[in-house]
Image (cartoon, rainbow, N blue to C red; front, side, top):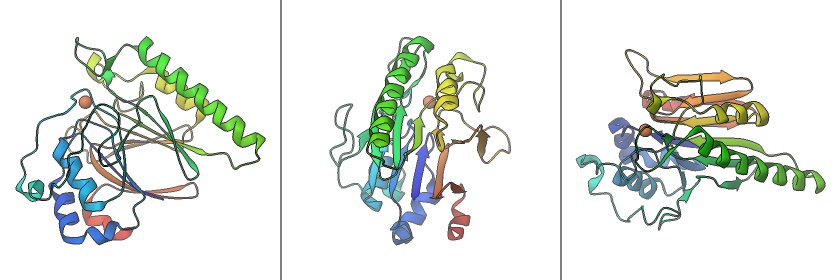
Length: 242
Ligand SMILES: [Fe+2]
C-alpha cells in the first residue's frame, strides 16, 4: 500500500513533480493530511492525483490561502465544506474509525489547549476521544475475531505529537499522554503526525516506538507498506526508489 502524507508546509518540489509526472502516483492508495495546510494546496493534491483523501484539522484550521502560481490554475473544485466531509469525498478522521482494506485508520485533530482557540484540547478532553476510538477498535477486532477475519493493522493520523516523541516542552507543542497509552495498548503499524516543525539541519523525524513507526510528516512523506515492511521517501529526488 502506498500513501502520500502531507502536513504543515506546502512543498514546491512535490507540486512541480506532480505537475510534470502525476502518472508516477497512479499506484498511490490515498492521501493523508495531518493538518495546518492551505485549502488550495490540498485541492491541488486531490484534484491532480484523484485519490481518496483522509485528513485531520491542525490547530490553525482553514489556514492561509497559499498563492504559489504552481498550482493556483489547477484548482477545479472546492475542498472544504463543513467540518465533516469534503465535497470531493475527503474524510475528516477526527474521532472516527475508517476501514481501508486490511487497515483501520483513526484520527485526532488539533493540539494541546494553549489559548481559547478552536481545535485545541486538554489532556482530559483528548483522552475521552481516544477512549471512544479504543472502544470502537475493540468492537471491530472482536467482530473480526468472531468472523475469523484477519486482524486489521492500525494507522493513526494526528496533528499533535505523542508525549515524549518529537514533541516540545511548550504547551502548544506538547504531546498527548493519552496518545502514548494508545500506542502501547494497540501498537499501530504507523503513526503520522504534524505540528512540530523541524529545526536546524534536520530533514526528517522518524522514530520507532515499541512496534510503531512514528513519522513527523512536516512537508510530505511517501510511504510504501508491504506486509510489515515500511519504506519512506521524504525527498522527491529519491522518489524513483519506490
Ligand atoms: Fe499545528
